[in-house]
Image 1 (cartoon, rainbow, N blue to C red):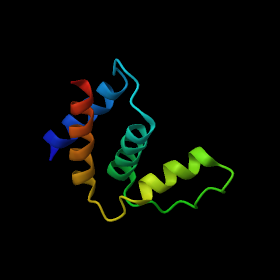
Image 2 (tube, rainbow, N blue to C red; image 1 turned 180 degrees about the vertical axis):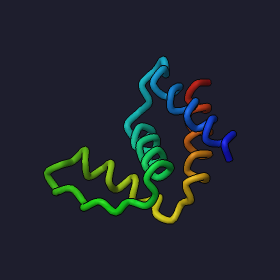
Image 3 (tube, rainbow, N blue to C red; image 1 turned 45 degrees about the vertical axis):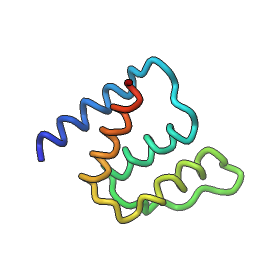
Length: 85
């Protein structure tokens, strides 16, 4: 378990050092996986229709409802690894 947590923390650090900015769908996936891994299922109030960015983030996170924290961490690690090339 601690190996997964260490790898997750390393991937979070690496995500800040990517040479190219990922496209918006990938950024939403990174955000959602991070939130699911660290906070679990989305229980926050859905942002208003006028908050386009907030709503997109909320929707991306909400789609991961039911995903275990360890599974989200592994998916995050894999995604950041694929972006590093």
